[in-house]
Image (cartoon, rainbow, N blue to C red):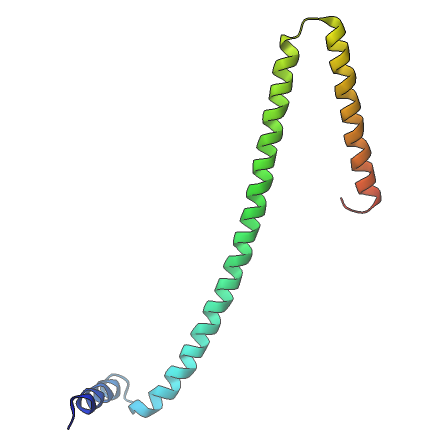
Length: 115
Protein backbone atom coordinates (compact mmCIF):
# COMPACT_ATOMS: atom_id res chain seq x y z
CA UNK A 1 0.00 0.00 0.00
CA UNK A 2 1.34 3.42 -0.92
CA UNK A 3 2.14 6.02 1.70
CA UNK A 4 -0.74 8.26 0.50
CA UNK A 5 -3.30 5.45 0.74
CA UNK A 6 -2.01 4.52 4.18
CA UNK A 7 -2.41 8.14 5.40
CA UNK A 8 -5.91 8.39 3.91
CA UNK A 9 -6.97 5.09 5.50
CA UNK A 10 -5.54 6.27 8.81
CA UNK A 11 -7.46 9.57 8.58
CA UNK A 12 -10.69 7.76 7.68
CA UNK A 13 -10.24 5.46 10.64
CA UNK A 14 -9.67 8.42 12.99
CA UNK A 15 -12.80 10.18 11.68
CA UNK A 16 -14.90 7.06 12.11
CA UNK A 17 -13.56 6.45 15.62
CA UNK A 18 -14.13 10.07 16.68
CA UNK A 19 -17.59 10.52 15.15
CA UNK A 20 -18.95 7.04 14.70
CA UNK A 21 -19.77 7.99 11.10
CA UNK A 22 -17.97 6.69 8.01
CA UNK A 23 -15.52 9.22 6.55
CA UNK A 24 -17.35 9.37 3.20
CA UNK A 25 -20.49 10.70 4.93
CA UNK A 26 -18.51 13.29 6.92
CA UNK A 27 -17.06 14.70 3.70
CA UNK A 28 -20.56 15.74 2.55
CA UNK A 29 -21.29 17.27 5.95
CA UNK A 30 -17.91 18.99 5.92
CA UNK A 31 -18.61 20.57 2.54
CA UNK A 32 -22.00 21.86 3.72
CA UNK A 33 -20.49 23.13 6.95
CA UNK A 34 -17.66 24.84 5.07
CA UNK A 35 -20.18 26.53 2.77
CA UNK A 36 -22.17 27.75 5.77
CA UNK A 37 -19.03 29.03 7.50
CA UNK A 38 -17.96 30.89 4.36
CA UNK A 39 -21.41 32.49 4.05
CA UNK A 40 -21.28 33.58 7.71
CA UNK A 41 -17.79 35.02 7.25
CA UNK A 42 -18.91 36.95 4.15
CA UNK A 43 -21.83 38.36 6.13
CA UNK A 44 -19.50 39.36 8.97
CA UNK A 45 -17.15 40.98 6.47
CA UNK A 46 -19.97 43.08 4.98
CA UNK A 47 -21.08 44.11 8.47
CA UNK A 48 -17.51 45.07 9.35
CA UNK A 49 -17.22 47.13 6.16
CA UNK A 50 -20.42 49.02 7.03
CA UNK A 51 -19.18 49.61 10.56
CA UNK A 52 -15.84 50.86 9.24
CA UNK A 53 -17.67 53.22 6.89
CA UNK A 54 -19.71 54.58 9.81
CA UNK A 55 -16.56 55.05 11.88
CA UNK A 56 -14.86 56.88 9.01
CA UNK A 57 -17.82 59.24 8.58
CA UNK A 58 -17.88 59.88 12.31
CA UNK A 59 -14.13 60.51 12.33
CA UNK A 60 -14.43 62.97 9.44
CA UNK A 61 -17.20 64.87 11.23
CA UNK A 62 -15.14 64.98 14.44
CA UNK A 63 -12.07 66.18 12.55
CA UNK A 64 -14.08 68.89 10.79
CA UNK A 65 -15.62 70.00 14.09
CA UNK A 66 -12.15 70.23 15.64
CA UNK A 67 -11.04 72.44 12.73
CA UNK A 68 -14.10 74.68 13.21
CA UNK A 69 -13.41 75.06 16.92
CA UNK A 70 -9.75 75.82 16.28
CA UNK A 71 -10.60 78.50 13.72
CA UNK A 72 -13.20 80.06 16.04
CA UNK A 73 -10.59 80.19 18.80
CA UNK A 74 -8.08 81.83 16.46
CA UNK A 75 -10.57 84.51 15.42
CA UNK A 76 -11.53 85.23 19.04
CA UNK A 77 -7.85 85.49 20.03
CA UNK A 78 -7.17 87.98 17.23
CA UNK A 79 -10.23 90.05 18.10
CA UNK A 80 -9.19 90.20 21.75
CA UNK A 81 -5.80 91.65 20.75
CA UNK A 82 -7.38 94.39 18.65
CA UNK A 83 -7.85 97.74 20.37
CA UNK A 84 -8.63 100.10 17.47
CA UNK A 85 -12.37 100.84 17.53
CA UNK A 86 -12.58 101.49 13.77
CA UNK A 87 -10.88 98.19 12.96
CA UNK A 88 -13.10 96.37 15.46
CA UNK A 89 -16.17 97.90 13.80
CA UNK A 90 -14.86 96.79 10.41
CA UNK A 91 -14.19 93.25 11.73
CA UNK A 92 -17.62 93.15 13.36
CA UNK A 93 -19.28 94.11 10.08
CA UNK A 94 -17.33 91.49 8.16
CA UNK A 95 -18.08 88.73 10.67
CA UNK A 96 -21.75 89.77 10.75
CA UNK A 97 -21.91 89.51 6.94
CA UNK A 98 -20.30 86.06 7.04
CA UNK A 99 -22.76 84.93 9.70
CA UNK A 100 -25.70 86.17 7.62
CA UNK A 101 -24.36 84.16 4.63
CA UNK A 102 -24.28 81.05 6.81
CA UNK A 103 -27.88 81.62 7.91
CA UNK A 104 -28.90 82.12 4.27
CA UNK A 105 -27.20 78.83 3.23
CA UNK A 106 -28.87 76.97 6.09
CA UNK A 107 -32.30 78.31 5.10
CA UNK A 108 -31.74 77.34 1.46
CA UNK A 109 -30.68 73.85 2.49
CA UNK A 110 -33.76 73.55 4.71
CA UNK A 111 -36.02 74.71 1.88
CA UNK A 112 -34.44 72.12 -0.42
CA UNK A 113 -35.02 69.39 2.17
CA UNK A 114 -31.32 68.72 2.80
CA UNK A 115 -31.47 69.11 6.57
